Amino acid sequence: MNYTISNKELGSIALFSLIFGSMMGSGVFDIPENIAHGSNLIGVLIGWVITTIGILSLAFTFIYIIKKRPHIQSGIYGYAKYGFGDYMGFNVAWGYALNSILANASYLIYIFATLSNFAIFKLFGIGNNTASLFLQSFLIWLVYILISSGIKQAAIINIFI
Image (cartoon, rainbow, N blue to C red):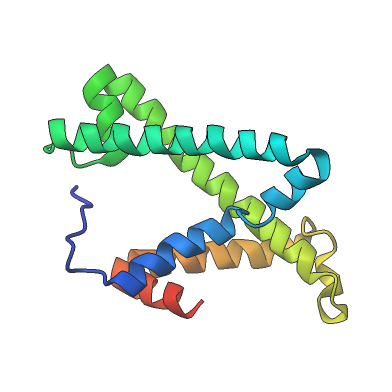
């Protein structure tokens, strides 16, 4: 299957919304606060420099691979399979899928634990009880159905969110 997206399918606002939504979900605003409580300015700056170097290295690595091997269309899985064989390709695909599942579950637990601070949502407890589990499962399936319907529809919803 080919999951590539041409430049004309999503506009700048939709792409920005997808990236911004991912950053919000990953806790980009929560992590610096947690670091600030346990470190001083120099420690935080060193952490940001190391992170910036790592992210830029990863981005340049993917740019290099894309230029050298444009026929690989499956992203990280395809690169691992091409470079190291079927077994490593499978492990990368499995690990990526497992990471996505666990990340979505952890985000929902965090959201439901936060919602329980309001009186109307007290039944969610700390986000890991039966009521939370059923509603979180429903939301994950809803997102799956939304994404399965097409990237354009998912991008439109993401713009509004």
